[in-house]
Image 1 (cartoon, one colour):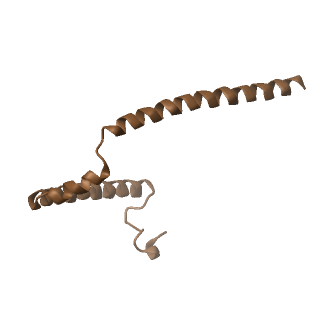
Image 2 (image 1 turned 30 degrees about the horizontal axis):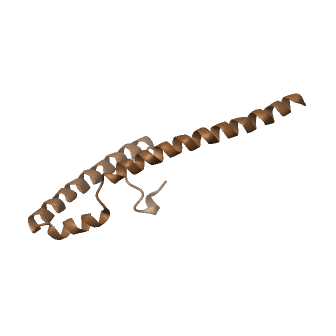
Image 3 (image 1 turned 180 degrees about the vertical axis):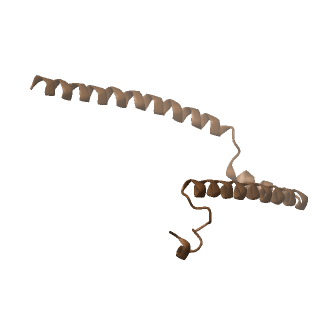
Length: 101
């Protein structure tokens, strides 16, 4: 019976110490995050920048985004092929349920 009492006492002490330590670490992390975000511009300023952007700049941004989307699509296709080979499926069966095993 004394072991159970020691367990409960240790559990309560650990909970209190862990909660206090976690609170201190959380407060420090929150203050660092707030200090880091103070250097950033507000989201409203990003909309003001869009109004000042020229058509050439917007076209360059669009082309850059299209290139990134193409890279992402290629990466997705590569992973899909690798997973298909691992699972024993070489054809894509996700588009037509009648072809599924």
